[in-house]
Length: 279
Image 1 (cartoon, rainbow, N blue to C red):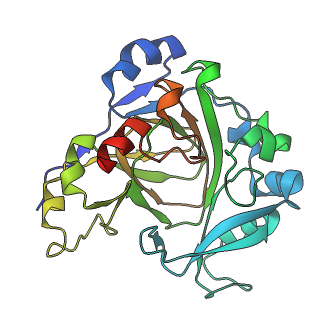
Image 2 (cartoon, helix red, strand yellow; image 1 turned 60 degrees about the horizontal axis):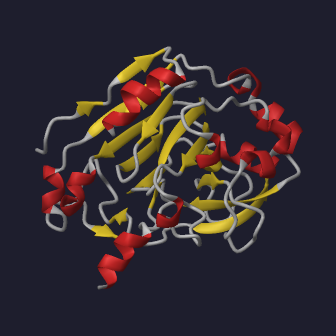
């Protein structure tokens, strides 16, 4: 048995000023409820999104295993029309499929560059729906880095990793479980770069990963309309309890020169840290 689960603190109906003064400086995750996220809560049905952006092609992760693992690459990248992705991601059994009738889908939106070097920005990649979502004024506009549109099948669980930028995840549709670990737990996470090798955090292989049982787990369930603040370097693992639609906002909270300019995802180690490791 590992440590008991610590609930992530919940705050309701907070202002941007309250977030900046009382939550942000703590450098601790926070679940935020009853914050205005715009008309997307009502508008973003599958039919509405299909009508607005259905003919756009998107690159998606496809796997027969709902526990997607970036270190072992147990998924393939495939291109689908957005409308087709919506149809498939809501179903358990597929009539049309790439790998198996029971395959899982996950979209993490990309920039325009097909090599993945552009930063994701919902205003550029999905302008027809960008105005539907209101991004809370939690950070300076000039510090904005990216806005990532995410869609996932029920049951999709993403590998545990950290990002080098502060970010918020706005859960528009579907319930999601969030599990986070403090950066202090790094030596218990069995890292390869920014990713943990522990794929199954609920039933870990104790022979391969004995120290993981010592890592303190912080957890919450996100409901539609909720926002979670994920401070930089906090490890996080997401599990879609239902078909989900979300938008992730990243911003640069440190001096811009510390960030790798060739990092469109916000998860490459800061330049000073990379130099230290090389030395």
